[in-house]
Length: 368
Image (cartoon, rainbow, N blue to C red; front, top):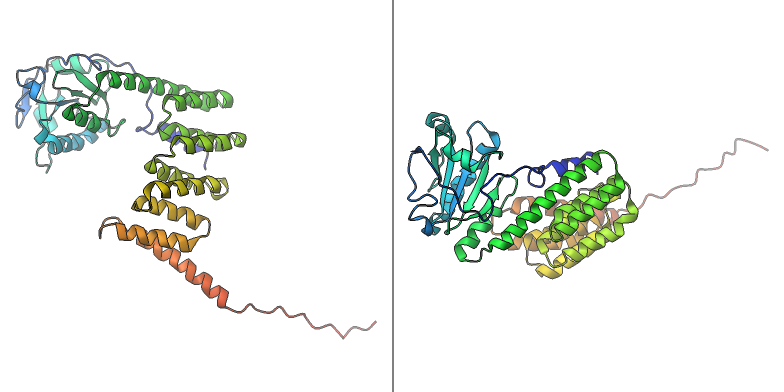
């Protein structure tokens, strides 16, 4: 594994961003009035705080068309609105730009696009996004309370979970606040780790990453960071205990075990731990009963790594059968053909007679 890999992993937006000051409104606060000066195209049937708001969950996004990360958010907003329109969700994106600046960036073929608001006096952004980087997105409950706040680009998947829980009545505000506090603590630890790592403070870095694991014991990210740190600092005495900790933490999660195998295979051949991969693959097989295509591919990869190509072929053939035609079969079929070619070549080499090594005749031209 190259030395740059840890720095890259720690700088990925989906995993890391520096701690920042978060302005109000915050989680659990009553949503402020949304003061809008106009709408681009259709107006939503309700906005947070009005008399009909109790019938809706809202997603309110503060964005700008000149900002790349904001632009990346637009397709997701359209998708959220389309997929949840029948559940009463209203997705509202607010910018203090002019209509002609925004219009070219919000076109979509989605059946139910998001709503785009104009507020030329900056009343909404001053209230909702003061001292906060854009894009900033809020999820607002049927009780007009902030249920989630953040940048979905950096925290993918969270909004969908919150919306689902609000709609089915399982959302717990206190649990959400605790989770947000934990997330803030984790971000602060990441910032400290980045500093310690850059300064080459090995012991301090390992202490911090252990705190990160304690903060998020059921998430893979801190474990992966420590695995790479062990490799890059050549602190191999730490490896057996760490691999055992990974196995204990994720022994009941098939998706995590498959991901663990994938990541272990990204290391250089000499740096991989075959015993660890075998144990993860065996446990994955038990959990999925060899009925999950992705798990079968992961197990096949480990078998091939160990030279067990016949077993790998069997796993891939089963994965292809389980997949509907046209849905991801092609890469698996290509790998299957490769493994089959290896087996054929091995059999051919077994049948080919070995060339005899003849002893060269003695040189009789020389006399004693």
